[in-house]
Image (tube, rainbow, N blue to C red; front, side, top):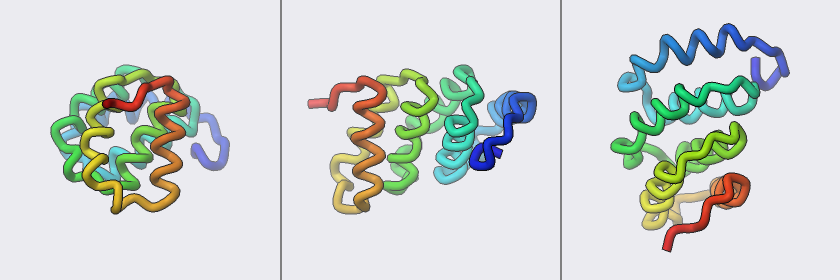
Length: 121
């Protein structure tokens, strides 16, 4: 839907409502892909994004570099502010930067810049 430009706000709202209580069942790629779809579709779902933050913070060690960078990209694209998520992803990413491919670097720094987030010290 998102990539084809098909607007389906009712579908996305329904997914947000029914997926939220099941976030513990998501894998890291599931989080990343779902957030990407919401961000790309333009459907606003701040409560869903907030619930995802709570679900992913204790599980960031399960995320590979692409999942980390795409998650930040999705928040920045959707214009959802989450300083806590950005700080946690920065901390989780720093020791693993050798695993990042150029696109992961690009998505990560773009997300920080677009979201107006300062890089942690």
